[in-house]
Image: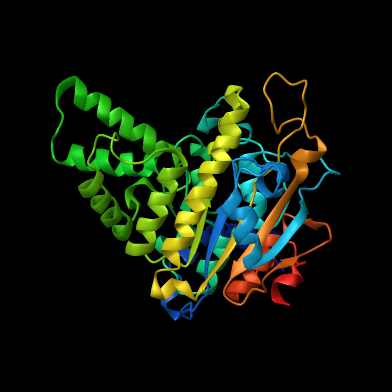
Length: 405
């Protein structure tokens, strides 16, 4: 037996095996991209509209009849479903009580210590107060699109213009899910990106203005660093923006702003895109960081009025009226510290920053139920999964059973 030849053959085998294995790993995203979503079953409902009651809201100003700034939520919506007034964000580990983190706790059903991607991807560049988080486990959007024949434009994240990092929370970095099962995002920034592309293609600018607009477009596109810039937002979303442009124009001075903008985006999406799963990231009450308590209370009142508008329009739509479940939950609570220079913070980890609530109402949900036990924010993902009839294997598996009583 030729030992040298045998040794060489073994090395060739090991090297070739390694190359093949590496090739297969490298092809995982392409394999996922080639999955034929048409073989998945149609989604029959119910539609789910997830309202992020934020950014950051305490129980006192949201639910307490004596102190509420949200009378529609307190006096009407709580009578139409199951209320969990003792929901909490974990207080025994070092988990942040903030907007980006809370949004991902809701979407993934797992607590995680998030860090801005600059810490693990220096090439992305440092960003002051960056919240460019990548979840390790799938989001509800990914579970939905993996389980059912739901196109990306019918799984929507509707996001505000002041918390831009959060509009990229529509997919995780999990190897079995990820970018090929992502949702789409509706936001003013996405509209500006599409609009710039249209204006540049039409030759609207030249000279110095052209260079500035090209740079601006590059900056907008570079924010979504995990996807192929050439794919764009997809034809249905581009048609949506064309309709928006026709109605509101290009100036940005006509369309609503703040949380009213999110409502308008959502209502137009329901008419034009017919989403099956939607998350609306309200945020106006976070303006309290400017230092005035009435920024917070006024934000809650605006959000309450916008949810009332959403509910009334959705319930007037024959296809949504009796086939929609609503979930209302804060991303986080707020601190209660009378000695703080800026009232109602949420970064100090005090008890009230961890104390939130959840309300579930709509098709098939019991009414006028108040659950007198402590539950966790991360139980929502599996609960929504069961409502929609899809598996959520990487989420906390303890559902809110009272929703199905």
